[in-house]
Length: 293
Ligand SMILES: [Zn+2]
Image (cartoon, rainbow, N blue to C red):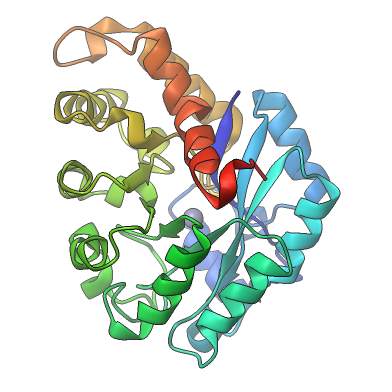
């Protein structure tokens, strides 16, 4: 089973502002209008790439950017295609009622995870305002996917890019399952060290695995292997910022070419299967009562 662990819901004219789309797409070589994932196109891209399921993300940056991809919108797509999507809610801890909104999104809308965007919201992921949100996520046993690493969004605060900020959160909420988005690119060593210290910290490979040179990706995966955390890495694309077919090809290349790897040993079939979906399925199976949804 192939699971893309990082896919953005949302449509260009309906949700995103033009300014945000311009800033975000500038680094991808795609036009701003490409920041759109209408349901039919998204399913077609998944089918083309052989992707069985995607973690589909809401995105609440209303307070700073003046737009959001609402939880209800994501929940409606997931309800229409429960066999293809696992929905992640998004809340802003800088806006009153965030923890209640997460509870409602999980218990009433059926969403199965949380996506947070701390640097976009100009606050640290370790800001105490997140504590009641993390408590609800821990209580409901839903994973929290946190943006870590660089973003070209001009209003984002670079003080809050580093995955190191999650160290305190992982220590304070030992039952919480955290996913570090983009393996903290470019601070991938920091992200891997965090994973080695906290057994419930995962990371996704979106953006990193496609936009960095293949040998750089192989070096990070080899380091993950040596630290014993490779089984908590989840392949993902960040679609529509990266195409699924390109990203799957890159992973196949990494699995096939021993010469790319610092120790001369490419991914084994078991490691490849784990990265491409096994680890993500295991994460879902380990949370909210064992049902994959
Ligand atoms: Zn993303």
